[in-house]
Length: 558
Image 1 (cartoon, rainbow, N blue to C red):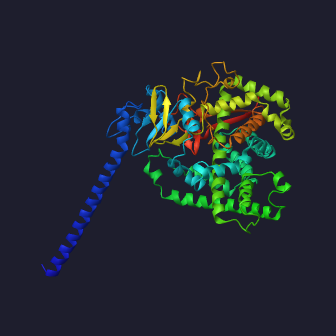
Image 2 (cartoon, helix red, strand yellow; image 1 turned 90 degrees about the horizontal axis):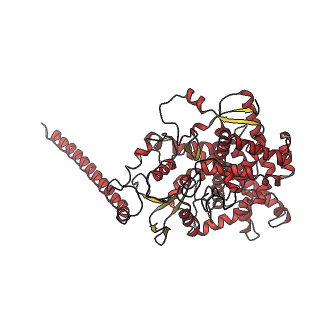
């Protein structure tokens, strides 16, 4: 064996030994770091468990990781995450309104709230901040820090800027836009009624609500119900590619196409909104000027308010073009409004139709109310709304139906961040919040049988009775739009939109789910109901009915 060969062999052998040693060192370091992080994640829960704080049976190594799998086995695989935690709250009898959960490394430390009094303390009494864990969820959708994730003075300035654009008077002034888009939606329903084909109610409703929020936000029609619109299509694509925290499938979670598609969608949305910003800014520059009667009396959309706020900071010396910093900020806020404004509204429209179809007595009361307010000639309802928009506020039973649909099928929950100086008080228990993400679980709060009578029943009447009636909603128990300073800025628009939809549809159509037919076409042995409901909620942005709400629509009386 030559000296050169031996030398090369030893060099190669030494090299592989070095690689092996390096790999072992990296592996050992990773394990040590994992153990270190796990110890510090479990340690606070160990103290809480020893102090008798409410929580399921806790293990010093596994935490609460073993308490969810038995529950998940009883639910459909695609059900939304809150359903599992609501069932855990039902099983964990000692929670009495709150319990801690240690789900590291798959989740952040949680204090789950299921009672109205504790929700009031978190969101109103203490007005706790929005935690950082919300930012990864909203980043692909909004593109940056936004009105939902901001805190402190930055949030207050932004909220004050947009509040006028979502006031009751302003939103009522958008009636012509809302009616116009709703009439397109009604005609699409007519086409389905004539065709008698199975279709996804959730899908067509999502495009409809995108058109509504688009015209209110941008002061221009997207017309995505009938044709391709780059902004609307990019937003819907972004939602469909969104990856949720509870996604365990590695092929979905680590799909290499996701960042590419999300980047492309973000660029499309930002380019579209940027062009609209420049267009509106040019109109301001060429108009009578900031503060003039023309500007004050103009129909101000969200984009107009953003421009006006920017102009007010220029000290009567506006630049020829908008600054990149302002455009980036405005794009983010508008993207947030587009997402939040269309997503939850669509879901609530679907569930309103669903619950009314299941309760014919409620449907008859609703139709009778519409006959009384608008007359029995349904062909005149749209014109009446345009001539007398205030009539939409004379529909108490309609509003009660919408609220009950939102109570039973909330589109989202709320999350707040704990503080070292804040403890929540519940009867004789003081609940520390330091280091916790406080999850106000709307599904559980709004069906909590300790506070709601006949909690699982669809009873619009509960919103019309006096405070002495047992059905009267408990204080702080209805939280779909949350309460306090951080309540939903767009709730007035949501209510108005859905009331207009119901006014223009329920007397013309019978809309019913077609889940039995869908299941025959898509046979499966998997679990298909949650609490007996086939239209259970799944996560697609917000919460939406399973399988897109397969549906058939017929003209009333057919």
